[in-house]
Length: 264
Image 1: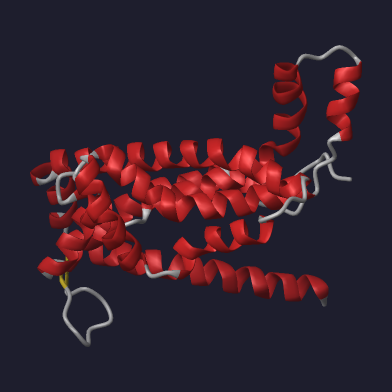
Image 2 (image 1 turned 180 degrees about the horizontal axis):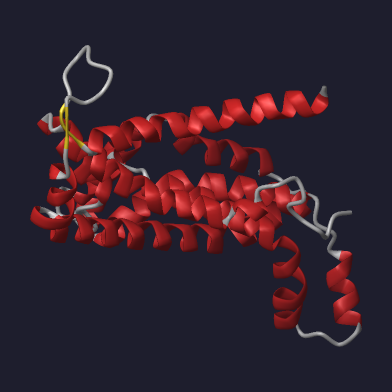
């Protein structure tokens, strides 16, 4: 009975995940598909010829730009999130609840308001329409998730391991690299994955701060969707989803229940 229930749940999850991609694949290989027809009337490679031929350079450029922005955002987010999460998870201090509220504000407030509010500042500081400006605005959305994830990791972290390492003569650097980072690495990976995926999918903030000069794949994808050419939009959507799926697949081993070993 339990096995049957597990199989039903697994089938439902797989169907829910795979079905949208199956429709995208059908759209990307269709030349003519009109409502209310269930299947395309004519199949072809026009959309993929456009992706790899006509707009190949533009799509590759946007793909590389998106990858660089997402990786930079994830690395900075984790680099800030580790000490912040450690402080919030291991210590009690005045103003801790206020910090928690401040961290949730960029998540609660609509992204349009956050991006428009920062836009004027970025113009004055010369960060508008720059790669750094886009990374910084992405950090406003990604950093809270990174800090909260690592806050939870360090809440269950046992610092006695570090004390034992110091008593055996380990330096501060070795305590960090040989004790803290290995024990919290799964949580760090999860925080980095969240930051990468959030940055990868950002459209509105990139459009406002990037000003159309920082061309990422979501910007290009939304422009194609607005053109009404669904096969091409579907093909670019698949190109957009594949790196995110690979990142999720790479981090899948860290998304289970055993996310940290140095628990109390």
